[in-house]
Length: 411
Image 1: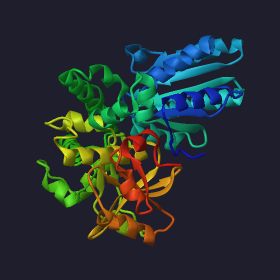
Image 2 (image 1 turned 60 degrees about the vertical axis):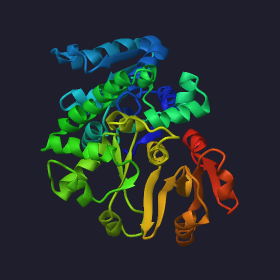
Image 3 (image 1 turned 30 degrees about the vertical axis):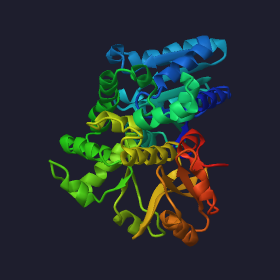
C-alpha cells in the first residue's frame, strides 16, 4: 500500500471518506493530512454529525488528552458503539500523541485480529509529522488523503462569489476559508493568517520534528521565498539575502521542510537527467497566495497600478493550484528561452506560459521550442480575460487565468 497522498477538495474528500466508511469494517486506517485552516476539523465534525451514534470524535489537542487513560478510553467508547453494528473513531490532530503511529498500529492490529467492526479516521496538519510515523509503523495499514488548499471553484461554491470575484480574491488574498469574513479589515486578516497559519506551521509543525537546528534561519528562508513568488532563485542568491547564513545543504533542506508543511514548493527544472535537475536553481512557488499577502509589506498588488507584480502573483497562483491538485510541476529554461511551468499528472502533459499583459509570437518562442523537444507536452497560454485569441491565432490553446484557476487546463 502506497503512502502517496490523494489530493482532494473539501466536498470530494468528504464523499471519499463516506464511501470508504460504508465498506465493511475493519478497513485500512484513513489518514487525512493537509495545510492548517483548510477544514480538517470541520470535516471530522461533519462526518460525526452525519454518522450519528456510531461515531466517536476526539481532539488530541484538547487539554483532557493529557489525562491518564485518555487513549484507552477512546477505544472503550468505540467498542461500546459496536452493538449498533459498527463504530467509527475520528481522531483529530493525532500527531500530538507521543509515539502515535505505534499506538494506533497496536489498536488497528488488535481490531483486525479480533474482527471488531471499527473504522479509524485520523487527521494531522503536517505531512512531516504524519508522513514519518505512518511510513515507519503503518506500512500496509493505511490510506492517505490530502485535503488541499481551497480552489477558486470551492471558494465560489461555499461563499456564493462570482467567478471573477473568487478568482481575484484567490490571487490577492489566497483561499483560506476562515479569512474571508475578515477581508474588509486587512489588519485583522493579516493577523489571522500570521497567527493561525504561518506561526503554527513553522513554529510547531516543522520545529516539532527536532530536525531544525536553526529556527531563525528557517523563518528567514520562508520570508525570502514569500518575497520571490514564481521566481527562479539560485540557492547561492537566496543564501546572500539571509541575515543568518547557512550552508546550501541546510537551505535546501529547509525548503523541503516548508514544502512538506504545505507552505512553499521549490520547483525543479524539467529535464531528462536527475542530477542535472537537482543542480539547477529552484523556482519558488508559495502554495497559497494568502501567505504572500500577509508577508508583503505593501500587501496585495492592484491589477491596474502594479501590473508586473500582479502578473507574478497570478503565475504563482496558477502553479500553486497545479501543485495543490497533486500534479507534478516543474519549469524549463535554456537561455534565453524559458517556460513558466510544465505539468504532468491527471490533467495530462502540458507546458504553460502565463501572460497577464500583452504578448506576441516572440514571447512564446520558449514554449514552442520546449514542445518541439518534448512533443508529448501540449502548449497552453494562460492569459488575461479577452486575450485568448492572440495565442489561438498561432494555433496554441489558450485559457484565461480566472478559468484556469477555476478548473485547470481545458479538457
